[in-house]
Amino acid sequence: MQITTTVNGTEVTRDVEPRLLLVHFLRDTLGLTGTHWGCDTSNCGTCVVLMDGEPVKSCTVLAAMTEGHEVRTVEGLATGGTLDPVQQGFMEEHGLQCGFCTPGMMLTARALLDRSPDPDETEIREAISGQICRCTGYATIVRSVRWAAEHPAEAAASDIKAAEEVPA
Amino acid sequence: MQTPAPFDYVRASSVAETLELLARHGPEARVIAGGHSLLPMMKLRLARPDWLIDINDVAELDHITEEPDRLRIGALTRHATLLASDLVGRLFPIVHDAERVIADPVVRNRGSIGGSLGQADPAEDLTTVCDVLDAEIVIASPGGERVLGIADLHRGPYETACEQNELITEIRLPIRSRHGSAYEKVERRVGDWAVAAAGASVVLADDGTIEDVTVGLTALGVEGCVPGMLEAICQQRPSEELYAEAGRIAAAASAPVEDQRGPVDYKRHLADELTRRVLRRSVERAGAMVPA
Image (tube, rainbow over all chains, first blue to last red; front, top):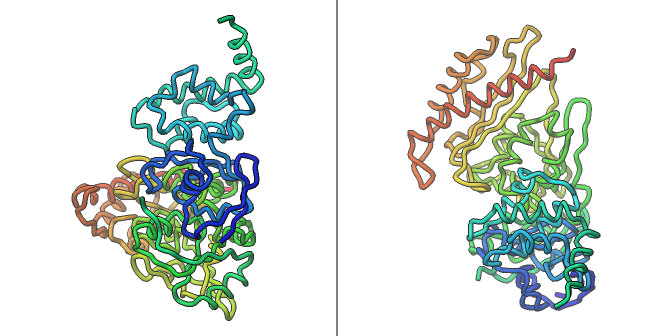
């Protein structure tokens, strides 16, 4: 069957099997391998992407279900050369450890901050409770999301600019 | 890699179209809403439908409507929507108690109340909630609509009275004054099925005694509500002794099985303790809802 869906702001039309899962559509059909594929059973949350702005586990959504909807993956977080504050926060606070859960964690954080711009630690931990970090380092992930909350878009952009202006 | 067996997919835009598609594609067609019960079963080839009828676009099934004597919840209402609804939390705090411990926030974005009840998993939380609230289930048929009491919906594990050519469309919860409700679950980790859980619904009389009470248990081998509870503790003033008595009745009624989630005596202990806790909290909440 043919589906048309918007991925990271770009409309794409592809022929897919109805049984194709969203995670495989993103990785294998579109080559967006930033979406990681983990437990395959809706537990680990590594495959989280945003569908119409809400986090979903893409191993438990059919690609066909996204027809007419908007999907955002980690590749769609940065704007041009400017990192999303969440990405910057993961860098500043070492939220990125082995990196496997990171894309999903960052997308969940983005959705949380869009809904609740100043979340406390409890809110952050609740939001990411469906996602497993096997480095067991949630403390730095939580701090990364807090960093992003404290540095909304403008601040993050200027931080990067300032960093780039430092002479080599 | 877990992949479902091949199937054909079609999207419905209304209840009428869903029923028409179910009739057209016959006994091997299944309705898919959030898909968080059906898709995992399809990946494991425990389910192999020939057709999937996607009802995620059927907007008429996604609503929460307050009427004077009941709350009507569309079957496609997501867990996340129920949890975000102040109205639901005010009228039926038990729904919020349960929704907070159903899977995790990401799964709750997709899963729906109708899907949970239709799946009829014996360890599913909303069934107990609907049991104690005495919910009615609306089922659309080719010939019209029928309304079932929750007790008549479930015929056994993974089996309901909803026929293959029918669709669960709405859940109706009766609104009563001086009513309190609560749910508490013990799980091994976030998002897991219950080791054991209990739900309670209490109506207080004008004089503060218990006028009506129901207790339901999850994953403890009890179909529907715990029998004998009303007779044992109604018309009495709430007290710790009364909760203890209710706990003993619930533990005696439970028939847990030993599995990786724990031994029988532990689960029976949970039936007792969780019953006391949900009754205590239901009474507190019922008191809070007494009109000034």
